[in-house]
Length: 408
Image (tube, rainbow, N blue to C red; front, side, top):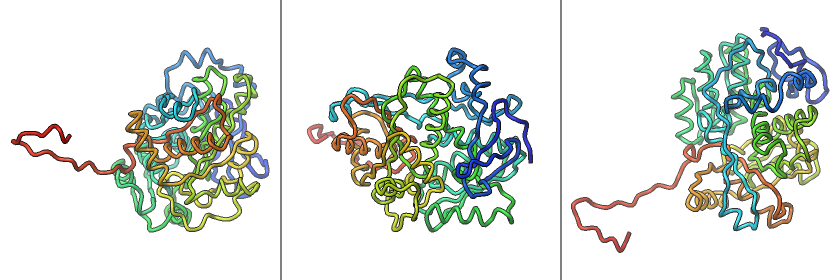
C-alpha cells in the first residue's frame, strides 16, 4: 500500500541500524526488528513556517501540521484535539518549597487521555495507506483512542486488554464500536494475540512503536510545552512511563526544534516515572544499562498505564534519560493512591493514578535533592481521573425527617 509523499518527510529510519526506508509505504518494524522513526527535511520546514504563523492558527494539535507526517492532501481523522492547559498546583508547591510546578492536563483531549494525539495521526496515516482493519493490545486508554478514531475513519478495530482493565475504560472501548476482548494476562499477552493473528485476520498491528506514526502525534505535547513556555523549555519533565513513547516523542521534537533554531536555552531533564511493582526502565537506568535486558517479573502495580514489563522501546527511552541528564523514579502504589485523593480534595484537580504517580515522584526527588527549589517542573496528567476507579460514596440521609446538622 502507498500514500502520497508528505511535504517535509524525507524517509523513515531504523532506530537501531540507521537504515533508511521509503516514506510512502506502509511499515511496521524495521528489518532489524526495531522501531522506525520519521525524518524530515528540517531546513525546508523552517523556511515554510514560523512561530508567528503557528501562533495565529486555531488552538489545536494540528497547528503544528508541518511537524507531522500528513501531506496537505490527507484529511486528518480528528475529533477536536485541543491544546491542553498547564495547571498550577499551589498546595504541592507550598509543601515542596517550590514556585513553578505545572501539570499538563491531557485529560481534556477526546476520549479523555493523551492517547488521542498518537491515534489521530496514526489512524490518519493508516487510512491514507488504505488500511481497513487495525488491532491493538492496550492497558486501556490506547484502546479507547483507537476505537474512537478507527470508527471515525471507517476502519474496523480489534482491541485486546487485560482482564482487570477498569470497567469504564473497557466499556468505552466497546462502546466506540471496537471488537473488544478482555484477556487473562498482561498487555504482553494481549500483544501476542495481536501478532499471532496478523496473517489470518489481515489486520494492521498498531502496537506501541511497531509503527512510526503514534510517536509523531505525541510530539505535539512537546510542541505545545515549547510554545506555552514562550519557546524556552522547563527544567524538568516527569512522565508516567509504560511503553515510553511520549518521552521518545518529546525528546525527538525538542531536537527538531533545536535544529531549526526555534527554542532557546537548555533542553529539559526527562524523568521516567514507574512503579515499584513494574519498573523495568528504572531498574535498567539504575544499573547503568543501555537497554532493558530482562522483562519485569511478578508485576503487581495497580497503575495500569505503567504496567509494561518488557517495553519494545526500552533502549530508546533509556537513551532519552541519558542524553537529557534525566533519570528514572519508581513510586509506591499506596503512596500514589493517597496523593491522588489528597490533590483531588486540596486542589480540586482530579488526576489519574499515572498523573498522581508523577506528583509522588517529584516529592521523592525533591527530598533526594535531584530537584531543586528553583527548578521549573512540568508533570503530566495523562488522563482524566474520571477514567479510573474511585472510592465509593455511601453517606445517606433519609427524607422526611429532621436533619441533625451537627453530625454532618
